[in-house]
Image 1: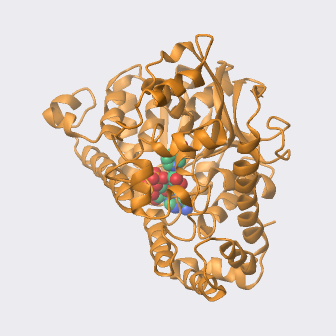
Image 2: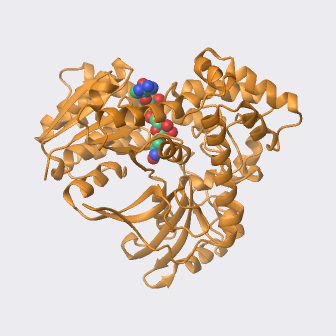
Image 3: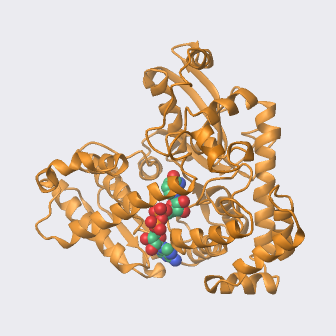
Length: 483
Ligand code: NAD
């Protein structure tokens, strides 16, 4: 085992970073490594750093942490760079969404057929996409052999853009495939007896293989549906959509089950307005991409940031005494945060984020199975080589070995879902890579919510005129190219 340097960019991403810190401290193969926490928000950075340092000490793990607000410093001698930054934060995304809604685009202009996830913005999120390319280029200069592990969204557009503009090795990550396990729980199946595969694009994956103890798993799903379980179904939280009426309806049409965030990425049929969302994703939230579903998430994120700040500032705080410190309030924490806390308290428990284990597999040859976003090389038939696909792969010291996708994705998945989704990625990348404003407008002209050319032009102009978008405006006014 060789110590490595791992940079986490956007380390102030509260709950996510603490999950990575947890996994890093508990992965023996990475002992002796240096973890560089980088963020432009010093307060958030200090909070995560303070807790990381205390955590590693309490666990007795052999890991060093550094913190910096300089990207260059963080990248210096890095072997792995995890990008989790959200440039402009959720506040910027809310602002452009509000502008879009004033022009008649419910949930903003980035909410598009097959791409309804709120923070997966591909049209207006110029600063985020430009940051991806700038980061990759800086890596070429400072740490050309390092791996860029992309978790910040949009992963699909981001990985494709980076690979077209830079030679840096990039792999995309998402925990969405855990939807398979959620499904198994709903069907009362033992996870260990499952034989499954998913394939597609990020936030667009389908359960192509599903066997349980040698039996066809889809027959079990059909029985679950026929048994009237859908009628009694209720979400536990806005993100609990894996067995929602929308998922089952998509399964009926496509012949395969959509997994994880894919369920959120149907057509307007499920997303037209709040009432429609509630019908398909359950009451009261209507899924995570409604106004109230979003507020639920923001409350959790804010609480995570607040807790990290509070504990970091309190010198008497220790993880070992956490339960006493927090007392009976622990059970009142929202599920996601409580689970993160419980994971930190358990010396052996890892998070469900795959990225640290991926590093361990590459560095130490500890063979594991992952679902990763890598360039297609014939893995999914009908998708051009080079386009990033999300597929199961075994990873070892030599890299990834993608499984043969068997059985193939259904023709409907390919023609009604993956091809049109891929085209939307290509439109977004064409616009940004060529600084072509007319392509942005044309994108909206194909949106069923657009009633006139004026509507599309005006909404784009207002977004370009935001003070945060000075460089975006210049980029599109001067037809600047990315590469
Ligand atoms: P957040 O706003 O809470 O955190 C993002 C962090 O990025 C902040 O601390 C911010 O200060 C920092 N940042 C902003 N600009 C930066 C810059 N130029 N350089 C360095 N740091 C910068 O956001 P979040 O909710 O934690 O989400 C972060 C990203 O991760 C989003 O894109 C989100 O969609 C994505 N995400 C991905 C997955 C996945 O499984 N792939 C899961 C959840 C969230």
